[in-house]
Image 1: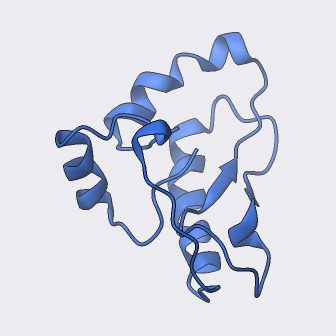
Image 2: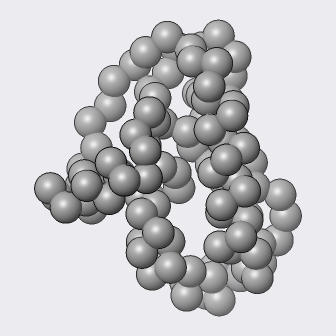
Length: 103
């Protein structure tokens, strides 16, 4: 789950208004490594921890190509949020959708 690369929360919501309802609706472009990806992850981790706190089974992790310094990548910060129970955490889906997350 993640918010798209260099796109702000407002732009993510705007993209949903024009039809981007899931990750499948997003185009993919590879770009050179961006030093801001780590900072973006920290910001997103903080927000996700607040939203998912009651369901989390461990630390939220930065995964995928943007987590590898120097690697050319899609400008999307991929995040892994481990939960205690998939069944119980389904309640978080609508909360995440309302907050503008794409997954």
